[in-house]
Length: 355
Image (tube, rainbow, N blue to C red; front, side):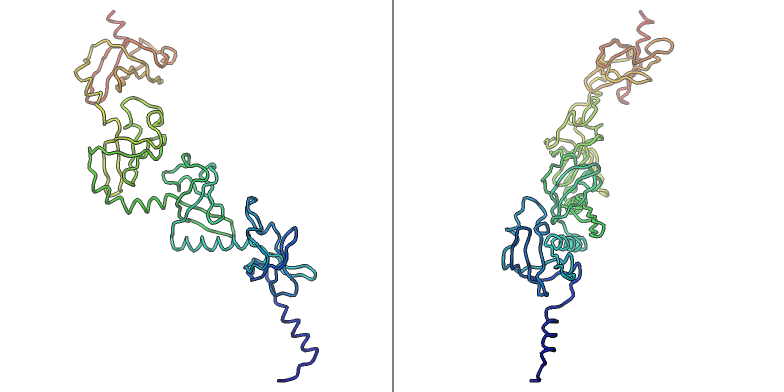
């Protein structure tokens, strides 16, 4: 074996403890000492690196001693490299974050479904956590377009639309999961359904325009116009989230895989009931149900509204709002009666003429 001089040996020894650390490197190290503010970690450099407590946990509820123990061997993220007399700074939190971003990027590429925990509802959608990272679920990417029924801590199956660590942007979609599941079962479910069939479903979402009813795993639309024969201001006036309903299928679109439902058609059609009950020229009593600039809608039978035009209230111009209040009971004459077209015209002026 060749002889090595003392100077050469010292140089080799120094080089063996010297390697270049770069910010964002991931290095292996052993935890060798603990102090009040953090831990010293042997990463094979000339000096031991430092792991501050603030770079260990993401939440105050977590205990650093449960995560880091003496003589643990772990991987660490380099926050700051060695400079003169300053030691390198390490982070477990940033390593976990970087690994989470990479995992989410891989899951996005493979189009896999992940579980997100809802943190809060905000304008335009939901804030949710996946793999320790906060993401956003836009309202348009929720199952039926709104998160008003979702509660904090609730878990949702989502797809990853965007995972950009540089912009700290994580966009999630619950709707894509639902759409994928729906497509898998829609054909089978729809093949067993037919128009006029009565089925039971659960109300899974309520909107201004109607309600969505879960029918064996796919949503059918119950429009507000099909909820009741009577005028209602909002679907929630009649039905509630989670309620089980017997509904009738009124339309099936096999190509678009859509089902239209009716609740009001589960009962008798009031327009058919009044066909032989009233006739033109009858003077009856009704209740003011709605007031507009062109007249008033009068409820003359449960589920049946008739129009009293402003021109049929009195001769000349009339201010309908000043003449009636909602709920007023008034006497009217049936001037036009075509129940098969769901149209009835009323008059007060003609009553006065005949009097």
